[in-house]
Length: 497
Image 1 (tube, helix red, strand yellow):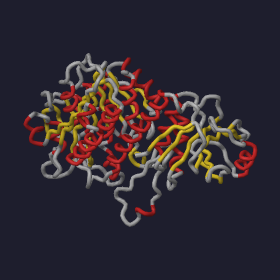
Image 2 (cartoon, rainbow, N blue to C red):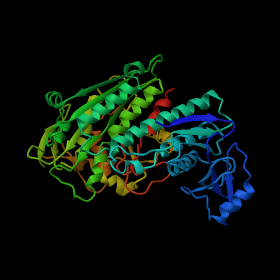
Image 3 (spheres, helix red, strand yellow):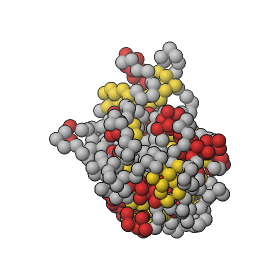
Image 4 (tube, one colour):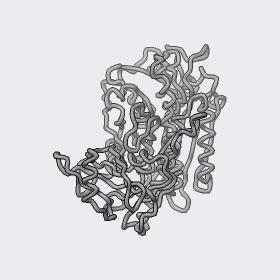
């Protein structure tokens, strides 16, 4: 875990990170060193000679005068007040570039507690590495920073200290999400996922911070009628599970109560609708939603936020075998709805349907949110960095989108056109699990909507593209699991304070 501290004194680390921005299209540069004074004239000449631009993701290192290393990280266009996400990405890019160093001080232009938190989050989120499965080459991998100091004149203010603490917790549990996503399916099964989360809950404090964990095994799922989870998992030697985490705040009355549901397909071959080999390796990330909601719940508990959370992670491996669900099989979901499985590769909606109905047995819910790497159509529509939001309650959606803008997570509202619902009709069951191909992301949302009570505010977050970065690292985002959705789920709980 990365340690974050605040300081307004002398820089003690031998690495100092400051911002660099572009003042004009002519390439004029501006050094942004926050509350630290630097001799900018000579530094600007050196940076100009090096061809610096100040663009986002640019990191330039030069020998320092009072520190061993002076690091400039790109902020983009010069501004009197930089957007928090620009600060977050700049500090993240710098932290990534500083792997192999033990500690660093970040002094960027922070005007208030929110911008300080953004810098702390970015630095800690960018300071991530996954080396659990490195063998003979593990010693070659540079280790992340052990400690990060944020230099600010506001260091002694209690609210600012709390923001730094929150950033530390956010980074720690985003790291847990990333670790789970990056873990190969040979080591992450429904059962081991439950063990990993149970261990994380125990390490965080368990019942002492208001957390309880329970798990249903395959026999219990079958006997209690969880037909969706059972059908998806029955083709695998690694049986399905349904994980539940409940959080009740200690010493405070909860103002709101939310249910979180996360898709947990620990590996998705497509079942008897087998996926092409090319790209299938990324299907270890098909449990990103489950990891996000579970880790977010632990983070919320550690921050002792006054909101109740009931979290469900339906977990299964979608495998090919003689016991796998066949195209045209009819299953009975939890709650009694029957579904004709026309495509076994549309499996996420089946496990979610069961869990959504179960989650709604909890009384007094303020709202319910499901998070899922649900459709390839999401990537076609919105690309790999923007997730989709679908809803039955525009007020709830607008609130979430505003929070996402604040946390720096990119979400975009998508409709649920009623005319697409008819494509899910089945001649032999209550509904089919696939419908109209065009608008497939929206059809999947409409399928899930069938399992939601009309008067309960609901959000469906399709994070298929942004959950797993197969491109180059950028800002605070590494290659592999990203941890998308966790920050905004925690922000929703913080809003209940």
